[in-house]
Length: 390
Image (cartoon, rainbow, N blue to C red; front, side, top):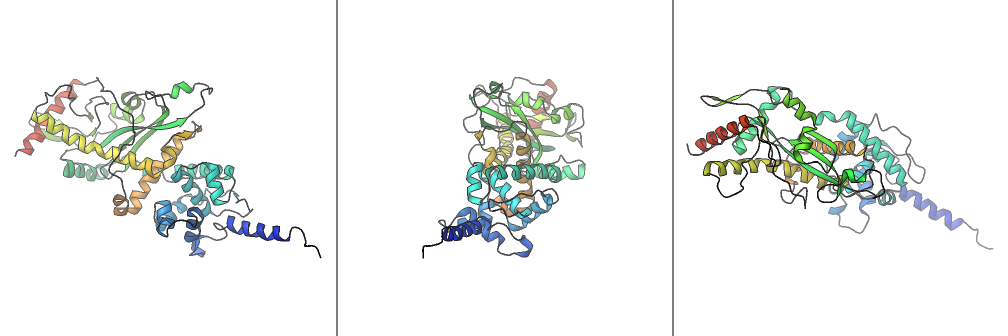
């Protein structure tokens, strides 16, 4: 008897379906094997056991993953399916979205590894971004009371010797690949001749983001980006950095402030280093610069680790939706803070403290100097120098 055509084909199809649905079919609560299965599916079978663990692949503990699922579970209710037709659970959808944001791989590559169509990967990721934006925003907020701000100021003073400092500010480029034929593509071209979108971040001493602003074209410099932000408007109106002042001399009250590099204007609430055009800095000014630069490194480290952890925004991004991209950047910042809040010392131990968040980019010195801020900086430098030699 001739073999029945399709018999072996059916068996292979069943095997393929089983492979493609290894993520789904049960929630974490009902299956202790879920984490192991999703890890093996993404890592494959040609890597070491360490490299195939859930914690290594997703860069977080199972506890943190469960917390993120709890944030979005009411919003991840779409009937998304794997290629086999099996429904994705909330856990599956979160795993898909985190893989997309964390790996930076193409939709097609992720779809092939997880057994889902690339359009499904895209839809699930965007649904996740919307959900985190709505339910996780409390992980990024400016301290609203003196009781909330005081621990940050105390830590800046304890570690860096800077009294009444509330944060450090920096800016980074999210590079993009845009077709030259795209309308107004040159608007996004920066001074390195890349297409990019900017992210401005203010960072606390724990490497957490406490204010972020994204979406402006890469052609802007640091001062222009700052002046377009809501943070600048609030500070100029006296609604931010308006807490307790500190007496540093008989005639000087030091208000709350943040620290920036020389690319930022010198303002009463934004202190930057002295600019060394020629080697004429006094010992007092040089010591002051050293303190400011060491403190400012906090922002550089935070932005570098943000990009290394969430590789989707590491760039260059292939023809992104520029209307949606700022929201994806925000969600990556929220996830950065969630990891610090949930993982604690483990997150700190895994941070990278070397390298650049904007390799190849430099900045020009901002010439905008507020006279009263210049006087204040001189008195702060004198105050710190006096404490150093006390």
